[in-house]
Length: 121
Image 1 (tube, rainbow, N blue to C red):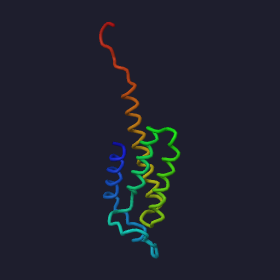
Image 2: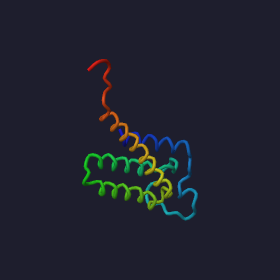
Image 3: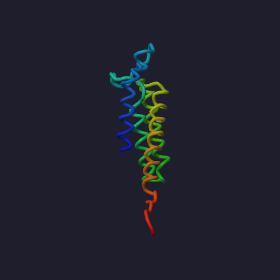
Image 4: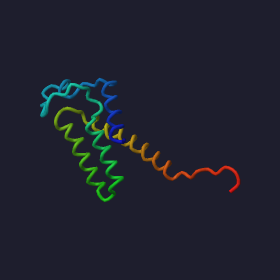
């Protein structure tokens, strides 16, 4: 749910913002992968990487640093490959941070909320 939701939000932002990619707006940017046709903001790869890292961190606490490191590497690679600006990757991480926090807060509230008793006990 977290990864799919974060992916949907990032994909919607791509359509809404129509931000040109670095190779389209900055001269002499070397593109190291195939030419993407969608907008630049936000990086769906960065968003889903951080969403996956958040999910795996909740399931496997000892591995949370490794999960975060992999997500950072994926987000950084999008900038290195010339298909995103740094703000696209940071925006993707921020989108997921907000989305994951909301999902986690909702799960925590639903899991530990006490049912109200009506009438005499």
